[in-house]
Image (tube, rainbow, N blue to C red; front, side, top):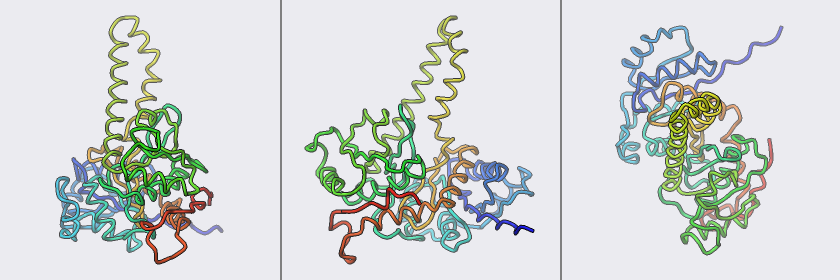
Length: 361
């Protein structure tokens, strides 16, 4: 007689995070469980969360509620809220991960607070000075990884190097790339281009064992010339949102042009399937959320305007990152870059080795 499989560890989900919480988040949790990605712990004000859950008739699903008396608003200062609202849904959610009661935490709330609370609760993995939000974006060739997408507005050169190391490890999981190519986003490909920080990061990256190809320009990013694009969080967030807006606008323009006359309408019917496929590749709701790389646990940042489908997909990716031990792979990638003197900060010495980033487990 075979032994019964151990029950899956729950994913903690911030029921109070997002523009339309808790109703949309609760519905996303229900969708996730019905798709087999549960169990889920909904974290937030128990009374409205329970009411939303009861309204959906989801009493038979593996969903529980963990009460949190406070909420961090989208417009609140991340650091201040992280320090003062110690019973927020984010604090309680990350606390569940720290206590081993959840395999990961998902929130569509304030992304800056998400990083601040994650750092406060779970701390950083060794040799990571700053966590980064990473995500995949479609390109003309294959999807690529972009980081940081908004966690750090200002970065030092050492931060960008660590982003590259973590991005390479993440690309192995997200893209299946055993040795991903890395590019540093700049305003030109010549070594003299960029800011002083970029030039120093470029120098340090040439000393690693990463497959670093040098500077890449913004116009080459959508072409998919590299697997991982590294930048600071301010530029990365602008690149992400501008790319989403342009891509979706172009799809709509094509549709409008095809509807302009009877011949175009005929063409539109023939191209409907291709256009639908293209739009699905560009739709952030299908991605669900982006991992917060560098904290000592799985944290997934979802879009503030997430639909129930997007929330469900965020739960799905959080579970996947826990299952494949994303945090362990990031830790190995950064440890492989350790300087000879264990007491010397990575900010003080160039990173000289990153071989662990390329090895499949």
